[in-house]
Image (cartoon, rainbow, N blue to C red; front, side, top):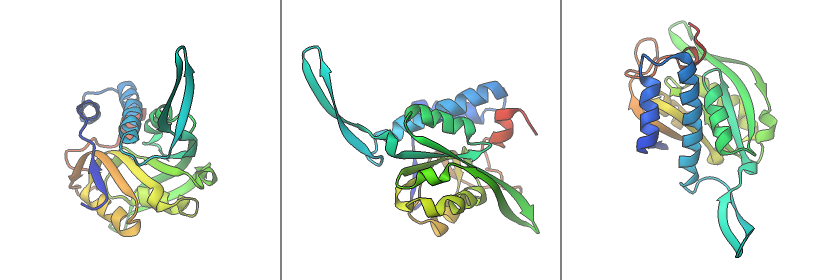
Length: 214
């Protein structure tokens, strides 16, 4: 599929399986999603897509210079609620990044999936930055599209990516159609969705699983 990449690092895949496993408790789920954000951040750091800079340090025997990630030029978007702990983990990978918040949730309207978004904070700080949206489950794609619409005037789609745990074909295709320059990175997919727009063989409702709600 266009603009879709599977991250098949075995360590990431192991965390991904834990986040699908039905027996995992909510406190464990929060820990694993935060670790997912951290490790995905480290993984994409080696893909030559993030802003970088040269850094030099003095050593006991001289000096050393190398290329490092310029995390001050990165903006992370936490898609509330499900993306919260994942965004915090991504923030551990990029400690100087700004973290914006967008509240987006989906609902069925006359047989179609729609998304509401009535709260955001810090989106203006995304301007001029490489932007990473975190949302564990990309199912129908309507919540992520609503979030992209909210932040659209502050971002460059060519410098914007989505990081998720599991992506459905339907959601990827929606993103491709509306924002063709936005790349999706996932551990699993592309998968189908069921009649309730949950990912078949997917993790379920990641927000509920994180915060022990129904």
